Image (tube, rainbow over all chains, first blue to last red; front, side):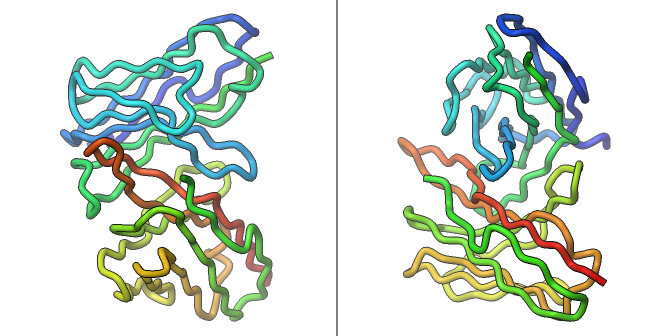
Length: 114
Length: 112
């Protein structure tokens, strides 16, 4: 199993540009989520999904869109990038959303918005 | 909603002990602990499901107090490999669905 994969590993954008961060998992996990990590702020939840076709907002959803058309994929879209979105983005998945389940993380995407 | 961890950072010498605390304003049903090495993704350490229950992993253990909505991570006789950032994680419910959130993080540096 590849586990959770993310692409790209690093991206530089100009303000106003759009892009999609890709996330895929091959563990048949129902629960998937996106976090951003900023110095001193820990990991903050952007969006999450409890299954294909079902998504919901996390703590910091503004400026980001998601969709979940398949169990495997959970892309994160930045519609109009802003410097405040410079961060490291992690995708995570777990078997389901029950309290006992471990979160498995992808390697992360470093995004720089100029 | 984000759990608050303390201290924010700690520096130890090899062999010393440390305690990392995680406090939530919301009721905790479970607490997970993760460790993140610099430039890497967080990795699962342990999970606590019941109030007052302690789980161990080598020289790292944790406790969970449901009433106080707190968890503590105990690192005994620290090793260089313990360096990294530690996060507590927990599930909160919103409109009947669970979502998973993390604490603010504690940076741990172990010196030789």
